[in-house]
Image (cartoon, rainbow, N blue to C red; front, side, top):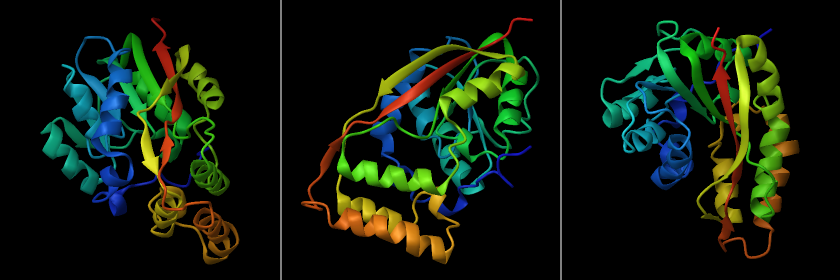
Length: 254
């Protein structure tokens, strides 16, 4: 059974994606975590390459990265960063030969696919026996900052958390992917203001907000916007340093 009716396509946010998701500094920080765990073999596959901002940062560490994504507007930006090493393709039907990729990674993307287990099975298919898959789920771990707690609780209420670590491990096993590492990584610090976060919610920057109906918007979203704007010193940046799970899977050798 599919998790969603269809995978989420990021055409509408392509021009603003990098700016609203932490930009190059965030990508570089994530790339450090990935490259410490990726094998020095080529090519490395990024599933959901988007604008190529993470793939470019990984490439800067000496890796050859190829990427796939559903969104052509996002891929045009990825092409500027990576050249012809990107392709328009669905994670559920990867245009890659079986057993040909030594490693793959998926960063903040599996919650967007129509069928998480099918995506994991496809990644397992293209990995070489003993190949590595790194996954960073979309939802950060608990934060003590007032602004992020409000925003995160809203996003979680609006979408089913399809990429919880425990669920991914349960789905990956039947696909021949064994969970061999479950770590917590700490991101680079950044500043967020309550008013700035409220503005991003009003602009529907996050995919969980794109299809919210009017009634849900009024009853669920508007109160969070109001709560953000009434926090003390709403224009004072809060220093945030998100923590994320990082899961390492290994494809069975037989």
